[in-house]
Picture 1 (cartoon, rainbow, N blue to C red):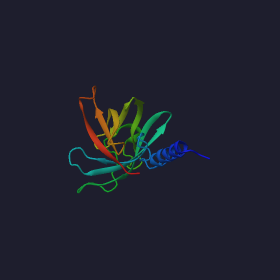
Picture 2 (cartoon, one colour; picture 1 turned 180 degrees about the horizontal axis):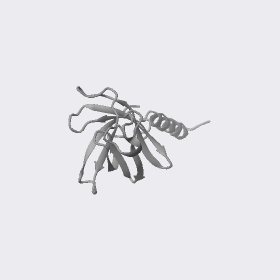
Picture 3 (tube, rainbow, N blue to C red; picture 1 turned 90 degrees about the horizontal axis):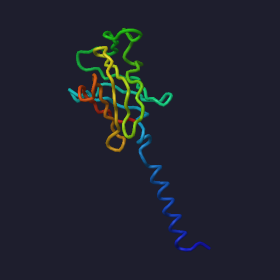
Picture 4 (spheres, one colour; picture 1 turned 90 degrees about the vertical axis):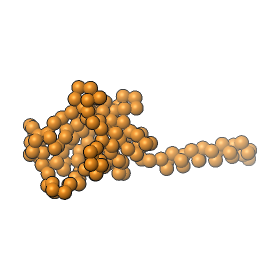
Length: 152
């Protein structure tokens, strides 16, 4: 026969298991689908799938949200090398981010509009529901940030 303490302990353990299964999937990892929000206009720009490969994060554009007066299927005209004139959809724009404590550092991000590659850092905010992505030249203070919203 179980005593009251054992029953309470079993109920508490069950509650912990149920609560953890209700947590946001991937809330402690940026792996998943994200909607990028333009830091100037505040409008959605693209859906980016972040995956992990060999301990580093990479992000590939899955869909774009064309702004009025822009191409529906843009290409990376300003890019150099292998990305030159490639469709933006399918383009890997985020590479090399590795976890360092609560942040992801030492990455690079490509801006398909100007073809430039910047150093990049990222960090999860708002319980993993948003990702703050920063592209910069030299030092992080010399850059700009976008907030991406988790979609999956």
